[in-house]
Image (cartoon, rainbow, N blue to C red; front, side):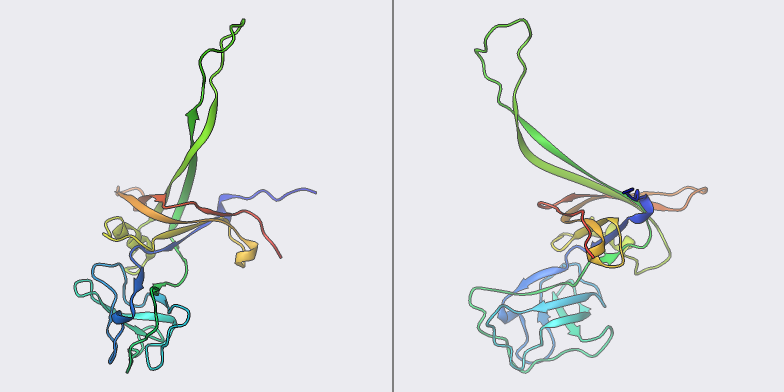
Length: 244
């Protein structure tokens, strides 16, 4: 049976912005009102889709409810955030603190990967170190002895070339800013080699990442592009099979 050869048009790049995942103690939530103390100088922006999750067993009666939310306001200098149930909606308020966290934490994190619509191409490389285990005292023969090796640590690096557009809210613009984001926790890439109609029908490489550089190129004859480089921050997840 002949296989269909994939082309570059089968791919896509999805992204979670840097500084958009935080762990919170119960005391970070309001006993009255809407202000959540998430911490200063994070990367949250107005209308970011986020998910609020409490630890199992927490008591949240009259507290801000868990689940999918939107960032209504966030001040990088004060670290105070308010949430709404819909983008641009009313602030969610509380009349009591959540309790019974034990030693665990609530989380507020960017909900899911979002498409970077203006990507021209992406690349991702994996290399493996080798450890020399050659021993001395080998028997003399006609040919030179060969060294022996065992595999060592792995590492990877990636890049994406992104067109610059006039859309102020484009994730491509945010990726450039995120290179300088002081706290990059939450930054993640999902690199699709084959983007199907559902996740089950797609092939991808997903990873938490550290953004390393942004290089912008401008000349009169070409569209403006920015090249972003990044490195996985842990073992990537490979999903190279599809199911129906």
